[in-house]
Image (tube, rainbow, N blue to C red):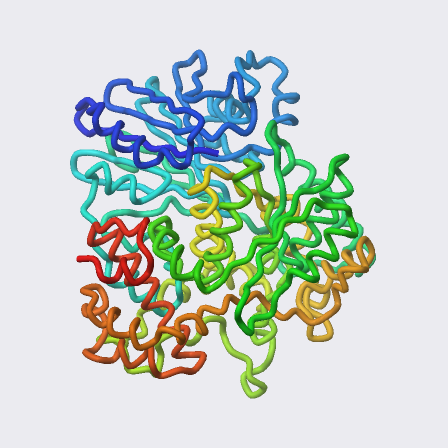
Length: 587
């Protein structure tokens, strides 16, 4: 796990060392264990390393005899099996990331075809005068780029490209509208003008500072639901999950688990306990001083059942006011997801003794856990509707612009997802996997953990699990009004104490209560923010904070997050050591 960045100049110009210095400095938090660089002609690469596998010889860049150089951010989980197949390859290290370098020499730009893992990889091949970038199919690891008249540049985070002077910190209006209405942005264009994403599963080839080729490897299998019964499905699932958790534990440093007490993280807990000789180290967040459902009691019981070393992390109102500016500053590619708050503090706690965390992200998308999937299957006259049909600010008369363009990105993904013989349910899952998963949930996990030098791993987002589960019959995913039915059945078999068929209460952070307690003060401060004045009608932002109600309360949270995000990333005010009120008062 690391930070990577690089530059390819046009017209044969040399890369300035100070540019690489700036990129490396901006990514230092992602790799506190070391750094390296490659400088050859018109290309320069940098890497900051968080050492997880091959602590002794795994420093990057990595080189092969043909002259190609590699820097990578991620883990290749099947590197052991791939190395065993490559019997004639003179490996120089024990690093998992040396494997894709030799696969590149063998397979060219198809080198990522057989990789199983999370990764953002850059390979410079002087013999072919090209730079090749590749990102894992689920988009677990981030990768961004800038294409200018004089250069092409890439980095693990947009803020690094801005810090190195590649682009100015300016907002793209359509993506800002997406953020406000959806809480995340979609597709290849980020909220920053001039900065784009390498899409999940993409391999991009650059020559002379210009993209000349791109291809995409999709995370989810194509085709409609298969014909398979519950018993066979559960058996297949057991093999796939066991295999995935086993390889996701490959590490030369200590690892643990974020345990919410829900179906997904409990399933991982059960397998980790089975596959490890030592007790699982688990972390659970809870919320004090509010009305929100607290999962700590259930998680504590489950941890005790498997003799796990269980750590409970409280997130209260004081944490909200103290940590939110730091959190907003870390999420340069913004996702206004309030679950980012406990994730941040969990990572802060876990990093005191561990370097790797397994997490349950992706379980809802792979096994159809969200309530919105059940809505998709109902006819319109029984309340059926498309996912994300309503924006966060719809009907509130707060924003200056109230177009429906914010849904264009989702609509584009929907058209692609429906065009592969899939059922309505599969298509809805694919839409979430393409944008919500990579640009909200996984961005949240990446930034919160990497801010603390911690690696996050997601066993559900594995090709073995996707192949085993995504094409299961709709009726095995949703049954008797319950999502993830087949996963619940599997968990009932291995850990009935988890009560997997009880109704899911959902994960909620009481941000609405905390904001309401300071609504008057917050409303006045928010109204004064330049970023808010650009998007809201005069007086309406202040009114929103004092109005009350669930819908308006969530919209108020979005504005608060956006105001802090813009203060750091657009206005250039360092808010990382400030409280919410101090940050908003800064000019």
